[in-house]
Image 1 (tube, helix red, strand yellow):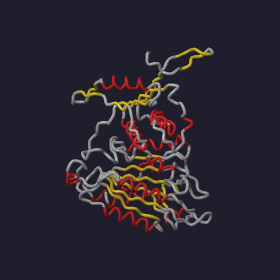
Image 2 (cartoon, one colour):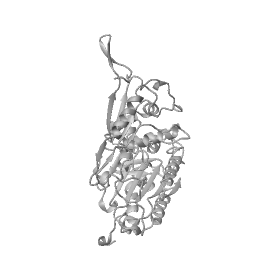
Image 3 (cartoon, one colour):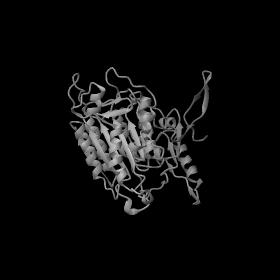
Image 4 (tube, one colour):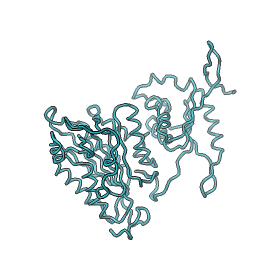
Length: 412
């Protein structure tokens, strides 16, 4: 296209199409090991789950492909998807999600269809579709055909990156896999893999989803939540799984992705939206620090903050979630992800009975559930995404030659 006529996605209403257009590919049906690669019962379920999440975004749509039999079939499905993108009103984000077996040879990650069973590098190239070939199709069939210059191409691969038996892959950073030849990549792209070089990715328990897909879906990740930037959500997934030691996802990106770009913004206009809360107060509901939390909310909400070029407004403070456990968890996750500051009130009472909670607990206290499930505030602090302020609540007493922290006293 003539670069002099290029438009940005939000500059002209005629150029703005769907928010997200997704191709979700799941391959579960492989020949049984040890002769074949072995079945992956959850791979197609992973693709379906991502597809359903895309459907919830609004003004978005998906194509679901299950068990493509060979490379030509897989490549044809990708091209058909690319050809289906409206070139006059392209989507803001083109998403390709793949769950299935994968291998890495040199700097190429190969997606393997059902009949693939490569034993040599040549067989791997002829039987698998590389991530570079995938980007080439997206560039040639979509990016080169449109005059909207800031469409993002997001590729998420839930697949192993181990090598053929007897082959070796150098660990660490690869400039080639990160940047790729400019003639093979769209201008704006993100690549997220569920494993790092030489590593395997887990399929998860039968009848469920892989750990990587589960992490993508979690409320605290926020990938499909309103106003959560893509970069933040995907970095959180990589950080979380890496900390758990299950596998080490990788995020690779071009340098021109806006920090505030979301899968699910709250408004059509492409601008940075205000955060829903400024401060999230985390405390034990019904505990000894509840009164202090309420007083802090009153004081904080009485404060004003300066807005760039638009005067002042009051601080927005999250204090209490709704009564229903599912709703409470979603509200809490939204508040934690959307707040610039997390104020964590900690007393001896805060952690009472945490160890007694079970995975299906219906405890009304959203903070205890969240602390037990994923140490949410501490993970956010570690990820460097929020400012977390732990505030000790109570009074000190010297016992047995040491200071002990006692329950909060409202009179203090």
